[in-house]
Length: 182
Image (cartoon, rainbow, N blue to C red):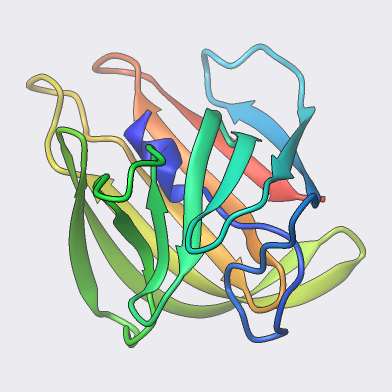
């Protein structure tokens, strides 16, 4: 569940914002499970942006019933509780350069993020420039099982345009959840 925390963004504020949130906006992602054990067809998931002063609530968002997001001097931050002192995770560091890494803790998981650089991502009929961030959970769950890991692409003015989260099912198979902003 903590890995889904990495998968956040929204609607339209300043064009250079990597977390453009607008009160009342609806965000639609096409979600697809990929892997040997995946059997469900691709589906649309609609999330709603609420009203917030410092932190903006987002419901039904990428696997969470509710989460809170903000863009600050640190970068794009996420927390899973509305409390002012709830732990927050920086999912995109504003000062990071290609190859830089940073860590954060959310619940019992420590996540390591690496900025991989800028890439061109297809978004329907168009292509957008997006910043690629890779992440990995702190440790393996069991010997022989790889840690949950993934990739997130942030586009200025759009937020997260694509995300992949890979979870190890057993020693031989894994499943990847792919999110694409519609």
